[in-house]
Image (cartoon, rainbow, N blue to C red):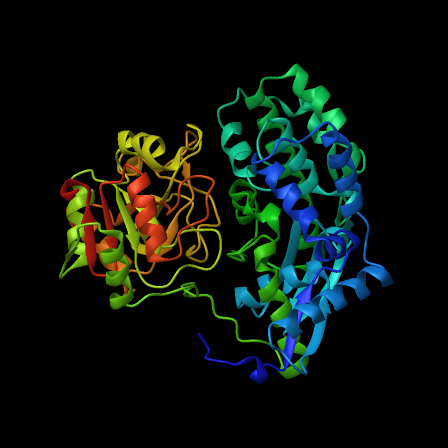
Amino acid sequence: MGGLRPSAVDAFASCTTDVAKALARLFPSTREAYYQVRRRKAAPGIFAEVKSRAKYRLTEWPPNWASRVASRWAFTRALTTAGFRNVTLRLYDHHACHAAAAAYGSRFDSCLVVTIDGVGDGKSATVSRFADGRLVEIGSTPALASPGVFFEHVTHLLNMRELEDEGKVMALADYASPVPDQDNPLLSMLTVRDLSFVTARPGHRLKRPLRRVLWRYPNEQFAYMAQRALEEACVTLVGHALDLTGERRIALAGGVTSNIKVNRRLRLLPGVEQVFVFPHMGDGGLPVGAAALAQAELAGPPDLRLDKLDLGSGYDDDAIEAALIASTLPYQRIADVPSTVCDLLASERIVLWFQGRMEYGPRSLGHRSVLARPDRPGLRDRLNLVLKRRVWYQPFCPSLLESDARAALCDFSGLPNRHMTMAYLVAPNHRESLSGVINVDGSCRPQMVADEDPGPFAALLRKMRARIGIGAVLNTSFNIHGAPVVRAPDEAMAVFRESGADALAIGPFLVSRESL
C-alpha cells in the first residue's frame, strides 16, 4: 500500500524469542504438525498426550541467549531472502508488543494497560501504566500461572479446538444452570495475588484436575464455571490495578481479551470511563506493537489511527469483473449496491458482501461479510445450516449505526465500539428488532458504525433503518466455518458456489442464486 521497496526500509521489528518460538522458527514442520492436529486435520497419534504436555511445558520457558541467537538468525535469513539489505533488526518482548499496540491504538493520553494471553517470552499477563507516550510495566504473571492456558485446557477438554474455539466455551456457558460460587471448584484454580494471576498448578499440570471436575458436571456447567472463574480473576486483577494507579481508562490486548464477557465486566467496573480493546487482540496484533515500539525508539511515539481497518487486499472493478468472467457465474452491474442489497435483505435473503479492501483483524467489519436481517431467528438458523455450520448455541453479531446502538443497548457507555470487541446488553424494547443477533442472555457483540460514514456499508445500514426501523444487519465473517475469511474475488465466488447464500454483492456487481 505504501509503494515501498525493501531498500527503503530502515528497521525491521518483531517479537517473542522464547525457546518454543525459536524452535518453531528453526523447525517449521513441528508447528505445522501441531496445527494439523489442533484443526482436526490429522489424527493425534498414540503419543498425543505426552506431546501436549511437553508442548505446554516448553512454551513456559522464557528466552535465553540461545533462543535469542536462533531467532535473530532465522529473521536475518528470512529478510535476506526477501531482499532486505542493511536493515536494523529490533526484537521486543511479547507482552511489551501487546501493551504497545493497545496503548498507542487507544489514543488515550494516559491509561492502565493490561495484557492477558496464553504464554509469550515467559509471561502470561502484564499490567502497565501509560502516560506521556511511555509504557511502564508495574506487574506481571509468569507463564506457569497462565489464565489463557487454563481456558485452553477447558476448551480442549470440551472436545473443542484450543486457541480457536474459546468463544464457543463462552457461548455454551450461557446455557448452563448456574453453579453458586461456593460450589464452583474452578474458582480456586485461578485466583489473583496483587497484580498477578495465580493457578493451583503450573499450566502443564492443570489439565488433569480440570478433567476430574468435568467428569462430575455436564459440559455446559463446566463451561459456566470456567467462564465465571476467568471473569472473576480478571475483574479482581484489574480492580487492584485501578486502585493502585488511579487510572479510569483501560487498554487491553492479548488473546484472553477476545472474551467479550470479560471485557464487559471490566467496562462496567465502578469509576471506569472507557475501555479500548486492540482490534487484533491475539498474537496477530503483535507486529503492530513491535513496529510501534521501534517507531517510539527511533522517531518518537507513533500516531496509530485505527478508525478504519480496511488495510488488506483490494481489487478494482476491472479485476473483479475479470474474475467473474473466468468463474462463468452470471452477473449484472448495479447502479446502487446499498439499495439493491437492502431490498434483498428486507426480503429475507442471505447476501455475501465483498466491498473495498479486506479488514485487518479477526472480525468482519463491513468489507468481507455475510449479511442478513437482524430480526429473523429463522434466518440465523438457516445461515448456520447453509454456510457457517457452527454449533447451534453460538450467536451471530450485529452491525448497527451508532445512533441506533445508543438507543438499543441499555449499557452503552464511553467510546462507540467500532471493532466488535465488547458485549453489551440489548434493551428489552429492542430485543425483537435484534432477535436474530442476540444471545440467550440478552447480550450481543455489536460493531457500531458512524452514522456519517461515507462508505457503502454505512449507506446500507441507513437504508435498512428506513426499511425495517433500525439501522442494523446480521454480520458474520465471509467464509465457510473453519476456513480463512475470503480475501480475493475468486475465493468469494468459490464460497458462493459452495454455500446456500442467495446473492453475492462484489464491487458494483451482483450474482444471484436465482440466475444460476
